[in-house]
Image (cartoon, rainbow, N blue to C red; front, side):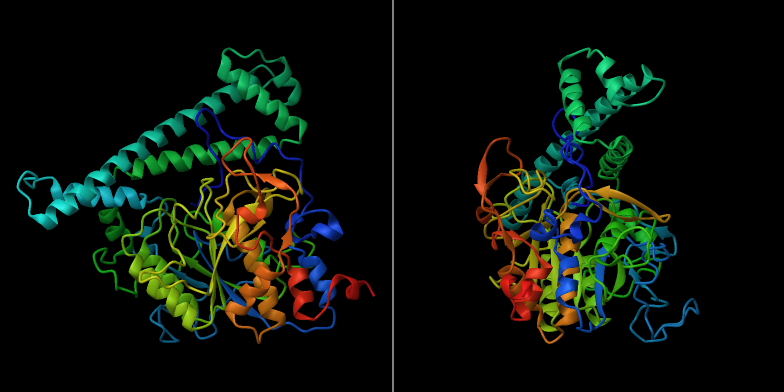
Amino acid sequence: MKKLFIITSAFISLYSFAQKKAPDNWQTLDPKADKAYGTGSEQAYKTLTGKTPKTVIVAVIDSGIEVDHEDLKDVMWKNAGEIPDNGIDDDKNGYIDDVYGWSFLGGKNGDINYEATELARLYQKGVKKFKWMDTTNLNAQQTKEYEEFKIIKNKFLTEQSKQEQQLKSIEMVANFLDKVKNQNNGVLSKDALKKYTPENETEKQLKKGLKLAFTLGLDVKELETQIAEGGKMIGNMYKYNKLDSDSMRTYIVGDDVNNPNEKYYGCNRVEGPDALHGSHVAGIIAATRGNNIGIEGIANSVKIMAIRAVPNGDERDKDVANAIRYAVDNGASIINMSFGKYHSPDKKLVDEAVKYAQSKDVLLIHAAGNESKNNDIELSFPTRELDGGEVASNWMQIGASAYKGDKNIIGSFSNYGQKKVDLFAPGVGIYSTIPDNKYINESGTSMAAPSTAGVAAIIRSYFPELKAEEVKAVLMKTVVPFKGSVVVPGSKKEKKKVAELCVAGGFVNANNAVMELMGLNQNQKKK
């Protein structure tokens, strides 16, 4: 799910680029006061004037965070019980020199960057198990397992074929852009596009899409960056899906992949080899406010705990469970989880960690996914639906929305669900921090989850008496509703009410939540 781009069958979708440029920091703005469907956090601070916040810890389980980024270094959590770089577990929590957090993806032989999907890992295990087995003479249990493997195999081969097509699509778009640029001294521009004569029907469609994007303010550099990122990410995923990922994991991290209960492994290198995604997420929540640098984070009294457990590929259940437990045990009151997958072989481990977080009053905020799917029909993992029928009450599932209040306000890529997605939050064209003291726009439910986590952090900071479930309840109660119909993600013309696409029927709003908790309403506030 850690995807920052959207690929269609023939060419890259221009959805994220064919939008009128949103105001800077639009995720902090308010629909009523600013005419932008942000979180209303700036308005909330005006309402909160005179109240003193308590610092809260938000754990970001992700790909890694650049802890010395100019806009993040002052908001990073530091383990007060640990003496940096002395090679000793000073606070006796089982993790040596965990000053900023912990990585479950590194060891003495380096750090994992790319990993196989969970589907690929299941396929690899099945191949090893049944390669030399006489499948014509199996007992009942073996027959059951073999039939399950055949389903996995079919899904895996289908997924590999899909990735091949995606790579071809990206290459096609890149080649098209090169052709346009080559006729204009290497520069992609609106005039260059106008002069270019398409060679086939596909190029006609690409030209049409780019023309629209230019009209609405296309950021050429951003488009080219996303195409490059897309080719790199999918290309490596396709490559690593064919490798023995368990052996690679064992060599790099050094843990036992067959021991799901192992906890104390990894390293303290929380940035890792690719901290773009995690740094972007962290900045949305808490980039330093008022420093006249970069962006304004949503929350103003937060420390970000960095936990690295999400590679480029699918995260492992063991790492997710341990990451949640590490966050809880080290003081986090909110955990942001901008990741997910569609297979979870060790779901019980994660379920137990979710229940542990619930018992310790920790709010879990999870991205709904970027595949335009209905979560009511197809679950992604991790999930609040626990084995045994229990539903975790400390869990929020978040879809992505855009800044403008029109029919396209729901991100075309966003997953949704009237029963399984709680609400929508800013997730289209979000400007935030990335490594090397830089900033870019990204889109995804990965951005919507931290937008919500930032709002939750405001509530937990200023109203510390509230339990996790109560924070969730007030955020659900005070969403900004939307009167009109919106385009259903993944469709071209189908429209529904927002209330048919999520539980709360609207968009997260910090100011509404604050006013509710302070016993105010809009008319009282104006007086």
